[in-house]
Length: 411
Image 1 (cartoon, rainbow, N blue to C red):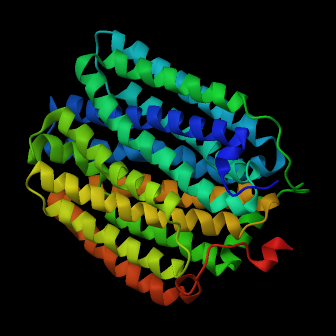
Image 2: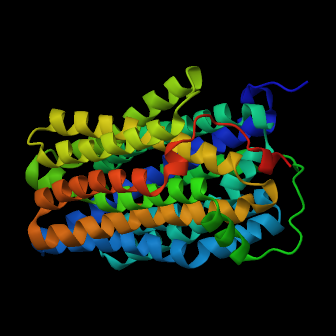
């Protein structure tokens, strides 16, 4: 008997735990690496030079994703997605162990941090398409939108706790933060090993070009993916958080962890709401409204002069982003045949990775030229303008009313 509750399926429960545990570990590493790079740089460099290095951390993570993700999408449609994800988590575990070992040493240098950041980028390039394509195989289509909401909440819960736990553990002992992340990756790996073989459509001859062509031809999918890319590249503010924590708000690593977690708090609350009250109508219009609120939240954060205002702005920003993630992920999975989900998910994740890492690079380099506050505010204003432009450019996306499988995909 088919049920719309994803929790009725043990494989999906294991997947949800793995996603939460791996996300918790990864966000711990991201916030700690960012703080350590900025802290080391500020001992001998100016604020602007340190901001430039923060942007390079994002670039170090993005380049492997850019180079590998599309190829991995084809691999995820050809081979067992479970083992691809397991291998990626194993690499992340190795990266956390390497950082723990380095932290036990006496010297503090930048190049190992950049090397591990690049290694984590490689792991993400493999994990992203495999996990995104695997999730729809674990539940029937009626349960998929709810599963996506819960999966997003698991991701956001990990993103909430990761910066807080990472900041607190690093403040007490840097090796402890890295070792804890390693244990969490181990838990994720064990959970992925518990997922049994799952049935899926045979992909036949697999071509990366087919995934790109499908995205280009499907205006709903293309609009949803490109809107996220444009908005986050322009309005992404995560690279600015260490600067705000140390040199604008003067709150230290604990305050950085709080700010880093704030968007995920808003996102987790919104994800929980969506599991209880899923969007049923006018989803396209709500997508554009959520992106507009995301841009306004970025502007408010950029202008903040106190920690409470900054945190509140980031919470609102995160809640709006969760609505965008929920609609975008549902549309992509529901509008894509299973045999192409690896490649289409790879295209989507490449755009997302580009938006996150290039957004950090854009923010860091622009802050080095005009300062952190103007760079953040200008990005929010530009993202607001892009939202209006995309609403006009992609009317098919704006007019989507319901989250359901189109007849073409059903066939």
